[in-house]
Image: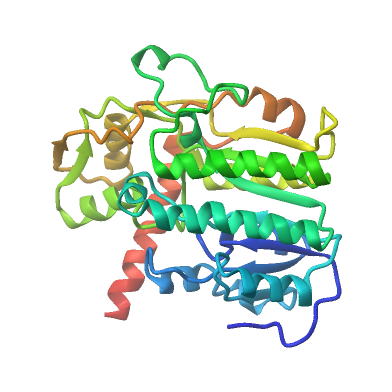
Amino acid sequence: MNRTEKKYTEKKYIVTGGAGFIGSHLSEALLNAGHTVVVIDNFHDFYPAPIKQENIRTLIQAPNFYLEEIDISNKAAMHRFFENYVGPDDIFIHLAARAGVRPSIEDSEGYFENNVTATFNIIELCKQYNLKRFIFASSSSVYGERGEAGHTVAFKETDDVSKPASPYAATKVMCENLLYNYAFLYGIQTVALRFFTVYGPRQRPDLAIHKFAKLIDAGEPITIFGDGSARRDFTYSEDIVQGILKAIAFQDFSTDVPFEVFNLGESNTITVNTLVTLLENAMQKKAQINYAPRNPADVTLTFADISKARALLGYDPTTPVEQGLEAFVAWFKTQQKQKEVAV
């Protein structure tokens, strides 16, 4: 699938994890805007590679789309890529990471290697090759556990993030601090975007909405950890892509250090129990629910204050969760029919 037979010459948008859920949507939007897009993805077996291949099946036909199958934690491979193909006017959008709260407890070392070490290697290469524009996918997980008292208080970018609740969250905090340092020392213009519970078509199969939909459709029980009262700020994929595109265009850094952090969410929360009810309505099927003890790494709330992103980026999420779930379910049913035909 690699299409880099010749050296790139034009300005490029380099997207790590570009064959994944969010990355494929972003790559599609950039291509539709007429840009040259280079996707870096190693098709890690965290979930089946054919899913990612399907995500970019139509994109690889575009003459201004290139795919590099590289493991970003492989420093030598990334160095070769920068040496041969990266220019100072390119924009680097770093979405690739080992994701997931619970899996990070089981493989903390792997998460550190793939998230922190890989990000260090990339930003160091950006410094060496004079690339001055860097967008980083962070996470709402950096805010940690707020407890019951925080259920009405939206998270601000200025809040304390020194107490992450999972190794995954800790890696994102470390990456933000590392990137701030490179912005401070070397002037690399960096925007860190804290994504809040993203869902939509092409959602990873391990994420709750997709997992619940599959089990409900099959008539099998779903498991809710805790009593279902945990609240999430569910953010539709198109709204996230809108925010990333606006972050790419952002130039008005407010301090001498060209580094900004923005929340990207809907700024609206619902409980997990409510989510299941809405999913039942969209699927027109009832869920069988089993409740299990809550893992302490699963925080009880995510809630984005997006006033900064509205004011400085012009970010304006437009998809309520009811509408977004309808779109997800329509995509999910199409995927299920295609699987049935293939069988």
